[in-house]
Length: 228
Ligand code: CA
Image (cartoon, rainbow, N blue to C red):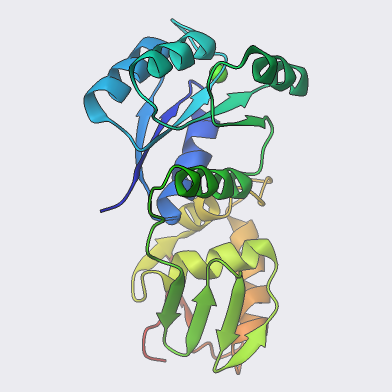
């Protein structure tokens, strides 16, 4: 069964990015928008780990963290807005398992979540390898083999390929693909995806002008072909 992660955060953009990354990594994601709701969800839904922002409406992250600690040993990763806050929190020894300072890389957060869960004895999500058509993606080593040949991809190209190859045959819109790469694509323009797709095709397609793996679905987006 997938491990569940509760995000307690009121900033919509951060919730959106962190949720996308955690779900892509195979976790079930719960969200609370303020301190009291966060505490309630910890009590009722018993997540395997909590990503807890420091600045929250209603009840700040510090108090939420202390309240959780009084009742359970649920792992907690705290998010803070400034490095000085992180230093202060570590000094306070409020019982969080790890800290990240904003802005942070969502990929790094996923790595920390994995590390903390591993430390407390939880199992990692089983998925480490994606095989689709002649493409093999190692999610931990971050390597891609196409017909047995390793290809070097940028982090954005890697994320795009993973998003598509995970569900061969399913059409993904540019907005969905943008979500899957939000850690890298700050411009926010959906057409940016087209440029990355073009580069990705150049690297993995035998003939980029007649793509075998990544197909364009006109007016919708792209899809990874299972049987090219
Ligand atoms: Ca906040």
